[in-house]
Image (cartoon, rainbow, N blue to C red; front, side):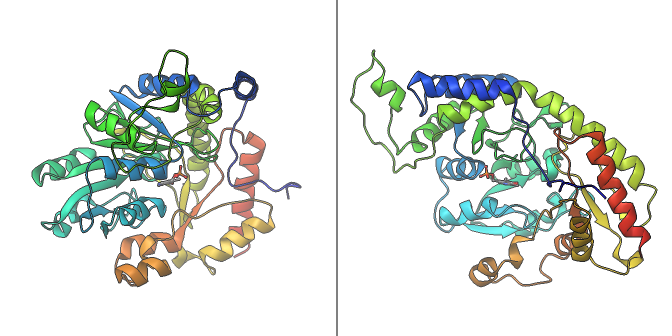
Length: 385
Ligand SMILES: *Cc1c(COP(=O)(O)O)cnc(C)c1O
């Protein structure tokens, strides 16, 4: 058994990131300034989209997208329950109502064939979550959004570097794609997020909303050639990214494709090993996508096992292997049951997957040895039954 605990995930921070942060600290400019501008431009180039606004989280990115698109109290927004709680919380923060649609059992993304049943005259938008880095069925979802005149927002927290039919997520014809740079996402700025979009007017509104609704950023107020004057034009938020965060992002974005290549290599090894094991179903990758491989969620075939998912996770932990579960379906959380009246049984596919899924460690900082330790631990647990 391995001696040190292998965490479920760790960021890959190199010397360049460290030096860039030091440079920022010494520069005297720490809030949103020149480095955020550089990071936004690098991201825009990488994604191939019209505009990028960097903010302090993906949660903020999603919230600002809804606000800037004009989501109002009472509006209904369609998404899936099989996501992180941020996706639905921001809808409620706008006074909107999250309307859940169950997932497809192969990809764990929204089942687009069930969307139209949930559309009413109050429906204003769809938030498509690209689970684990696998793009949703965007052609089908875009068609529905156009037919009913709905905004289409992508929760692309897992999907930086993913492609749908050859096009990068972030460059599709949607209203906004929101990315996360939380420490265990595919790239990190410690905390951070960004909105990629093509509509220049909405981008400008998002930028203003991200800083108190002020029509001029601090950098434009305090630098030499600019004046102190500003106006508050909307009721905004304090969601701007700092230059310290952007210092990490400037280098992380350059490494993203290499990071994904390592993730792909490790996934191939996991696939080859676990496809031989009847107690495990390996994650499916559709053939019209590039999958950013943020997660490696296996499914346990519980009918072939003497124990459940939770026991499997404890057994991994006993063997010094971390893991996680993505996700506890949102409708099962006490707050969501109480406020939206959801119950167990409402989204049977999401619930079934939830009871069977385990996300195994998958990150570029892992070594082959670490990967072998995960594989050995899984085999050892299954042998014991
Ligand atoms: C991580 C995550 C978010 C939130 O990202 P933050 O940057 O932490 O706000 C939103 N949606 C999904 C699916 C996520 O996994």
